[in-house]
Amino acid sequence: MILNLGSLAFNANIETGGGTPAWGTELGQGEGYKFAFEDMSDFFTGMVYKSVADIDKVTCPLGKGGNQRADYDFVIASLFDKVFVNGKKVNDAQFLLLVVKKLNGDHHVGRRTIKYNPRMTYRGEYINDDCYKKMAATMGLPEDAAWFVYEIFIENQDELHFTAFELGKEPRSYRNNEERKKAFINRLPKDGKRLYTIATQSKYVPQLIYYGAPGTGKSYKVNETTEQQPEENVFRTTFHPDSDYSTFVGCYKPSMAKKPVRNVAGDVMKKGEREETEDVITYKFVAQTFTRAYLRAWQTEEPVFLVIEEINRGNCAQIFGDLFQLLDRKNGESEYPVDADTDLANHLSAEMVKSGRLDIPAEVKSGKKLKLPSNLYIWATMNTSDQSLFPMDSAFKRRWSWEYVPIDYNNVESAKFEITIGGETENWHEFLKKINEKIKKVTSSEDKQMGNFFIKQSIDEKEFCDKVMFYLWSEVGKDNYQTNDAIFKYYAGDEKEPKEFSFNELYDAEKRTAILKGFIRYIKESES
Image (cartoon, helix red, strand yellow):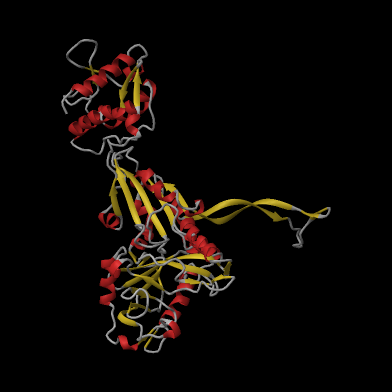
């Protein structure tokens, strides 16, 4: 539920006075005040599930002079003990939501409003006031920081989630309501989408692998999300057969350093006014992609992405090692922390001091334990055409979400691509559909098919030969050369029977154009 902007804000003051938070959002406007907001069903289901029987023990300042029962009816009060802000659990916190109905007055009689006032009490305790302070700490904010809540939603019937945005580490003042409202709006997502918040599990999947044929746009799918993030929050690596734990996490490596030259007495020698130095080899821990992404995620509340291209080309069991256990997550965080080796722990401990977050567990801050925070997302791509040297085991696969990226023959951009051979053009999509049908038939699989963005633009004869024909030969053609399923065939001139050709013949300048024209004709006219 999107809140009335400015109705739940802290330390964001109006210089001329006024602008006091209303601490409430109307659940429906218009005739009859029918409920009208997104996630209505989930929201009310959760409120009913967490409702309190002794609603008479609830107090809430309402109306002029704080009159409660005279002008308003308390419809339902719900007490939540699982509270999250921006996807992070607010430890030892409870929160009270109250729905009230206007009974009397000159205006808005019958309107229902959700209340979240910090001055509300339940059994004499200011539950919400305490929770708001703990929420700020969970976000890594000092007590007098300026921030506001944009959205409240309920998941799993018993989890109360807040979407919150920081305005500044210190109190903020604005000339008037309009200026403050503009500051709020500037902190909201710019893409117009209704997104829950930075780092909530409703927004991003913790571990995700995009898979499909080459050229379907798997990396593009990843980039659609990561390009919206600050550059310092995106880390990339590519797995290959030689990748291992040290190239993914880090290890000690030699480096050159300057060392003072000392005499036999141990005194530093000087040359003129300057100390004499010599080059020496030292060793220091060099963090790799995983460690750099891990540290960044613990140093910010924003989403941090670790992107692994071609994840199936490396030995994942060897590369991840005991990090494999961290992929079991609960509420976005690793459910089972693992011990860090001494070298890594020392590096993490030294770097963690740079974090301004207050919610880092002591064992994580010391570097002794590794635990993925909920704002660290590990996304990967996988080509189904690649023959994995090290197949992923089922236990590893289970810890990832998988999203297939299909070949999109309806894509407007790639549908404009053309292949030019000997002055004649052929539409890329028309050729692609036919060749993919042929590939599927001769391989009994879709894995070797080409995606619509296998080429990035219109191409000429040489590019077609170097990229498309080379792929077809290496992945399909050479395996069925001189068999009944051979795909490297072409029509020569007016002949009605196709001839087979070798890859080598494509680089005969006198033959290539005719072969390629005849090949495309053969693919278009042959039965799939």
